[in-house]
Image (tube, rainbow, N blue to C red; front, side):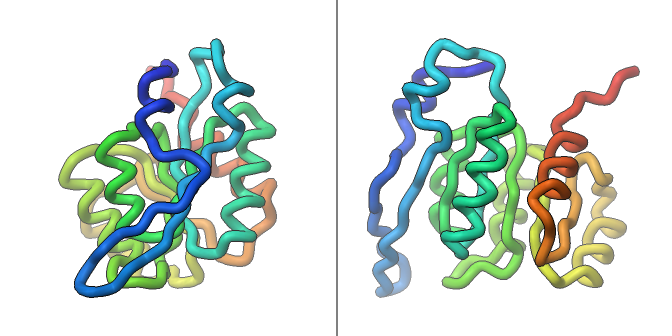
Length: 168
């Protein structure tokens, strides 16, 4: 279900400054497709992409938007947590190795204390993720891993699988 107010309450295409432990981070939040492109469509699923590589994040967003998803991009763990407070995505695509004070594990920890949104980790670190998945009772529908580098078609397949409801 599309909530038009949610799109209007999130920061869009612009820079935000975040003060944390004496550091200033200039961060951007982008929404794909633009509000005008999805206005009136109420069945699009929302994806939050947390990726500090701007080129990769933009490519992921363009591919996912071309396949009918609304995509919000943030480039840090701090901004991901702030965005999750106001934006309820259907899926989070999360870089495990974010730069800055908060990494992907920190974001996942905060996310799991408040919601059970599926998370697709993008990282080259597989052993740690497997241990976490087994120890926490996560399944491939709630937490999955896509090793970097990966083809965009593989990203799309994982996203579609994780967002497809399981029939009973």
